[in-house]
Image 1 (cartoon, protein in one colour):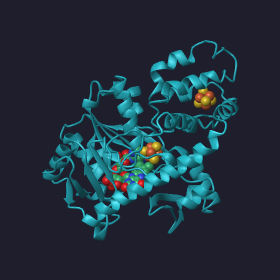
Image 2 (spheres, rainbow, N blue to C red):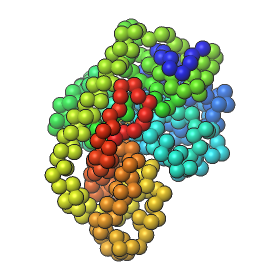
Image 3 (spheres, rainbow, N blue to C red):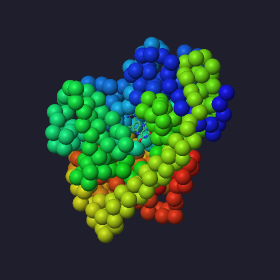
Image 4 (cartoon, protein in one colour):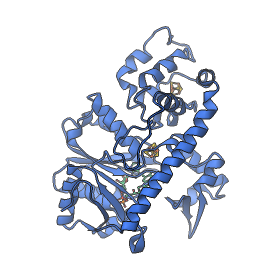
Length: 384
Ligand code: FAD
Ligand code: SF4
Ligand code: SF4
């Protein structure tokens, strides 16, 4: 019997999931148990598409298919939870289990505030997240820095501060700090992100804090809600999952890693925002002069969708047949999201003109409350 606040090491008792899972397959097993036991009607997860740089969302109703979703895709930059609003009627008529990174969780909470999803019907299994790497950048990085053909890579992982690839019978790792100094590595919004352990999900799962004989083979789970406690208790009682108490030193190390990630986030914020502070408005005008008015940034934002029609409609800012739009279009969008942007990076990631939109909105958001500082272990998703 586990309760909210408990922490455990966990791993699957299903041999297939244990093998395919990133760190023992606890997440996949919990989703599978939730589906089999009728706690949820479907599971929304991510699986490999064309190759390991291609992460695609899948909705699963047959528990036998869940093993295909096991494993972490670090080039999966998608915002899983927005599909709940877009294609699943906001979980208003079905119960959904979903695996969430911090930004997925923050987006879900913003969607719920706007009445676009029903949180009561959603079971969230959170993943600790050090960051994700854009697929295009990952391929360039592997070719240029690792000097390996990206198509020859059959596995990637992030471990002990290194981005590691496996190809043929070989493997190679390079420090993420070194890669990022040279413009590769995690997306820029991920470098600035400080929501590392998603404690607003029902469970928060990751490898930080797993030490001793089980290091690298099991997942550390922090129980963050009664719903999460219920799922974990039942999955263990049914024999689907094995658990043991975490090593106390591991809990201490986990706290230190989280703290170190906060400091790293601060370092990148200072770096990125300082470059902008001299002339934010001038930089926005210059960069957005490439805008082709495709509206991907509006369509894919988990926050500004409520004013999408207003932003896109014919006005002094938008004239049919003309590009770029008046820069006020962008300023108006930034104003709309200035106090709720979750720094998920979707606007920037999906902009066909590579305009650093997330950087601008994050800088504006952070500026709006410089006093805010997340505390270690804090449940808040506020990502200023
Ligand atoms: P599995 O049973 O293998 O299940 C993995 C689940 O993750 C599946 O549901 C799958 O659909 C989902 N998934 C895979 N890729 C993505 C994606 N890109 N976006 C959303 N869902 C996805 N843990 C840490 O402690 N520190 C970290 O720095 C860290 N960084 C991570 C970065 C990313 C991008 C991801 C996806 C995970 C990260 N994790 C991190 C979590 C860790 O890698 C494991 O996912 C976790 O320990 C669970 O392992 P498991 O074997 O129980 O999961
Ligand atoms: Fe992970 Fe944060 Fe990047 Fe989302 S924004 S992928 S939670 S580091
Ligand atoms: Fe313009 Fe980029 Fe937004 Fe498209 S996604 S409207 S090109 S800023």
